[in-house]
Amino acid sequence: MRDTDLYEQNCRVLEREFFDCVTGDKKPSVLKVMKMSDFFNHPNPHKVVNEYDVQLIVRDEDQYGSGIESSFELAFFSELRCRIPDIKLLAVSATPYDILDAHFTGASDVDVIVGVRPPEYYGISEMLEDNVIEDIPQGFRPIQAQDVDGEKVYNIHPKTIEYVNYLNTFDSGLGIIRESNTSRATELRRLLRDKYRKECTTILIGSDPTCDFSINEGIKELSDLILKRGQRVVLIIVQALTAGKDLGILKEKVRFGIEPRDKQLANGAQGITGRFCGYHNNRNFKLMGSLGLLKHYAQFEQDWEIFADEEWRNTLYNENVKGLSTHTKFVKMQAEGSFIPVKDIDTLSYEQMLTEEGREKLSIIDDEAYHRLLDYFESHFYDVSTKGTRFNQKGVTVRIASGYNQSSNRVYKNWNCTLDSDFGNIFFKKIPYQYGILISNYPIDDERNTLGFTGVKIIQSGKKEWRSQATSVQNGSMYGKDNDAE
Image (cartoon, rainbow, N blue to C red; front, side):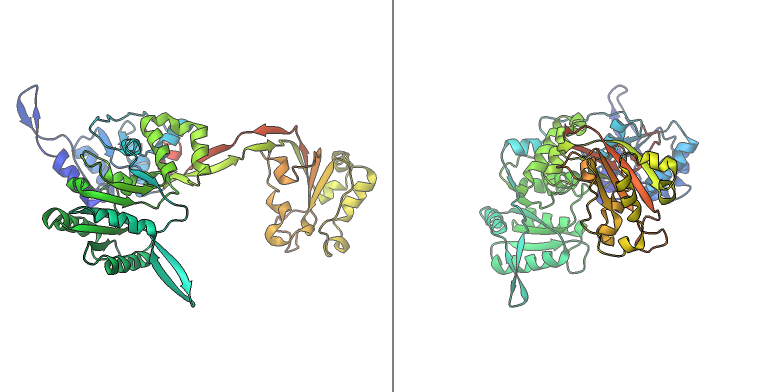
């Protein structure tokens, strides 16, 4: 962990003495808490492991993983594992999507241990059951911008006003709003202070100097304002409140939260919504967030294996959720609909086209079409407007490089197609062609020839079929490669 608050929490809880019920004695903790930066500094990983006889490394709050060639990946997998192959890593997270993907794909050797969920815990599943979550309106932002006489004028969104008014019905309490950038957050602070000067206090926390407090100082200030002075506070945050920022007993005083993030499952669930989860009795609050995203998270919360369910992934992707976590992004492999598979591919350079073997491979066209094809490689053809040229050979369609501009040249964009490609996307879906020919007819040394090849690619189509949508995960984390993680 890097977060200071999280580090201090773990030190207090994990490094203190404990009572051994078997022996009846107090014993020193067998757990050592370290910040990642201290653990990484060479040769510390080996020194720490050897000095403390470390048997297990716990990576707490691992929901965002680490990228390939990150400091943790280098320290653990590239160094420690080389010297101590049997050392174990325990990754703890409520959203471990990168390591689960590695588990299902076989990229890493992973044992999944499901944590205990006590009945007293109040999480996203329970919030959905209690109907405290309202779906975020399409295109919502806490403040709206309009151009008036060439100037941008900001107004508080009606939904934001509704939620702040709800806070003001209580004697004291906390409302949290996330904004996307500091300038908008600063403007929102000004508008809320002007409108609610007497009803509540508005503070802005973040890393920018224009904020009222840093993140850590801001959390401490909240406790003072709400728990000691009994005030109502609207907290505006800019990319803050990570998993290490525990609101503690302030959760009992939470009145509303507005979480606009809806493009990534982990931060949409672990952000403001995640800060409201825990062991408290507060059920009288309102939360605005992506309802579809949070419902998907609740399904995962109840059954982690749904992560590998195609329908679960497809629905998330279709609801415009672009990824699961920082290092795990969705990739749409196949749209639902008709699909024409590629049966065979042959590539011929212009010189090969002139040979007997080349003519044999082009036997799909008659002699007249063959000579017409060769003519496409002459300057009198490719140096004039050739867009819309018809090949006039039954069952065969062509795309000619000189028929497109350089920025949208479909010949070059589709040149690297494979047997997994959709013939209908390379050429045309509506007409059942048996063959398609991509024609790179510019000379190799012509600047318009961005492929660096002059010739043709002959593509044979298969039988048209219907395919369901397929959405896969692109894993850029340290777990997404074969590193024998356990």
